[in-house]
Image 1 (cartoon, helix red, strand yellow):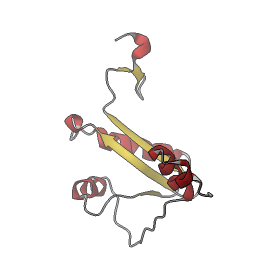
Image 2 (spheres, rainbow, N blue to C red):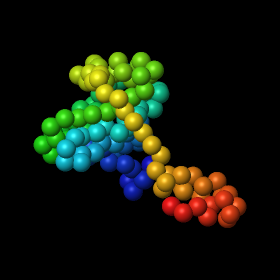
Image 3 (cartoon, rainbow, N blue to C red):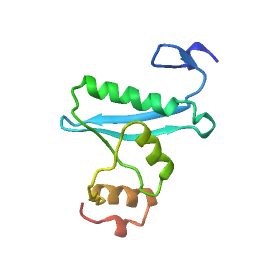
Amino acid sequence: MAEKDCAIGHEGTALRAIVGTIMAGYDGHRGWLYTAAVSPQHRRQGIGSKLVQHAESVLIAMECPKINLQVRASNAEVVAFYKKLGYFTEERITHGKASQIACWSILEYLSLPPKLTDVPV
């Protein structure tokens, strides 16, 4: 692999492959772990835990007072993973609603005839 084709890891070492990723954010009020993933063949090696811990350290450095995340209640393996890292289930109800922008994007993606996509947004 040529040097220019390498990804650079957190410690500055060249990587041969990306095996995990995490996306986190902070809105000034709460931090969120939006997604974390490790390729199936690299799971149970501590990579996911290290990714979460790194995201947590970045959020804490930003003075984030609390970190939230959402997982499907039916995903017992992921619930157990986050519990092991100190996360707990809060008594909350989560609501969701697709925005008109999301609906418009879906219509564009489907390439529907113009009369069906002429919906005011």
